[in-house]
Length: 264
Image (cartoon, rainbow, N blue to C red; front, side, top):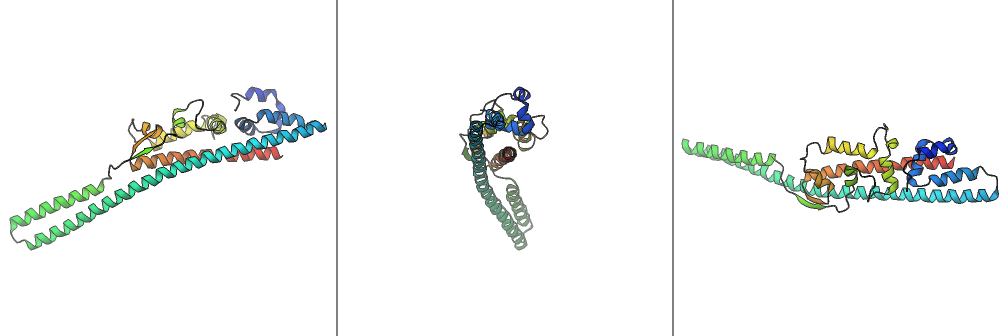
């Protein structure tokens, strides 16, 4: 598990800060290898054969944990990708159903409009001509108006293991995210500006752009166990999952930096 506060540790051990950047040390803490790095730095300065052999053992332990962290990141990214694809597929199904409905209504509107035009041309009585023309125009316009509105068709969509919930609620500990990922997402120094953690910035983007126009009760649908989703709701969910997936995948770049520092 990552240590809660490593600044005091780094201030007391300048050997680590001389060899590794602050960013690399923060990631080492996320992976849980900071004590191993301290031991490795000390052992590699020694000329004793036993210490040299022990340093090889420590380095192997570090690489094993880095491999485990990389596997956890890849697994979580794959799960986010799968959940986003699942939401998108069902949203596409609802979109296709809506497209068919609009096509039918549009065809009905066009056919009825053409039939009304023909009927008014054939009917010579002025009163009947007007009745048919007005009635046909109203009905045709009604079908056209219905086609302009999207349907309210919904589907029950469940997500018992909801990867969006902890990002929205911002708990100190997560029950679904690996410790390495949760530490990176909630450590302020990993964000671009360094003023708020990545998880907070993601939540703000959701609030300001994805969920800006949804009702106040709607977040419970996205961040609970599931419910009746319409197509737009599923597209919103897929977008949030894809944004989160991008942030999780970017941790691999931090891992690469730490591995390169170890190689040096």
